[in-house]
Length: 205
Image 1 (cartoon, rainbow, N blue to C red):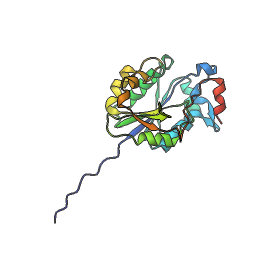
Image 2 (cartoon, rainbow, N blue to C red):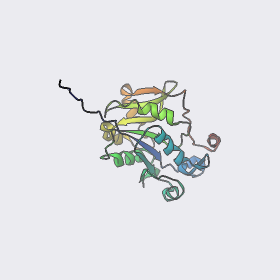
Image 3 (tube, one colour):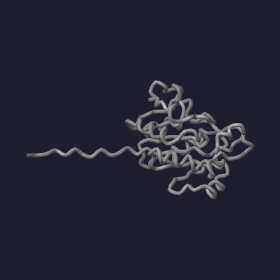
Image 4 (cartoon, rainbow, N blue to C red):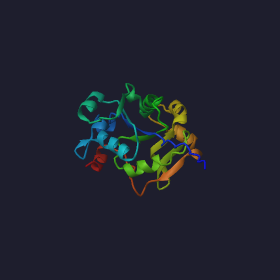
């Protein structure tokens, strides 16, 4: 009796891409990565969320006060890219992050913003699990409205980067391809608020 053995399917490599370069202009110039949350810099919390949500590897894009972030935050095990053009907006950080991931063997990138601590590992895991191919495009939804995190299959990275200008990040690309996005409802496990102003600091513990 002859048995045919099927090759073992490789588990897709979904990298976590944390955008943490913002200078906190509306927070009086306090870099968002260094805001304190549960006794540690906010960037550490976001890295842990990506890891606990199943992302591997984790890449972090820093910008404002990058040297201070590296000195104060534990980013061990992460690949770190410093974006010298961070002041131009989120688009430059997204381009830098996707550029750093290119050729690293990842099948997709799951993009998380450092200033959304209400988004935890369960939401990350849900969106990560929406990966189907290297052209996958998925995003968390909150009561049907698209939000973060967002997953981009590796074959889309060049297109996403080309559209990432100013402070829009991937918004223009996502609007243009809205019919291709798999929305993953996460309102039952996460809250998508941003830490943008002094009033928002009340969300931090």
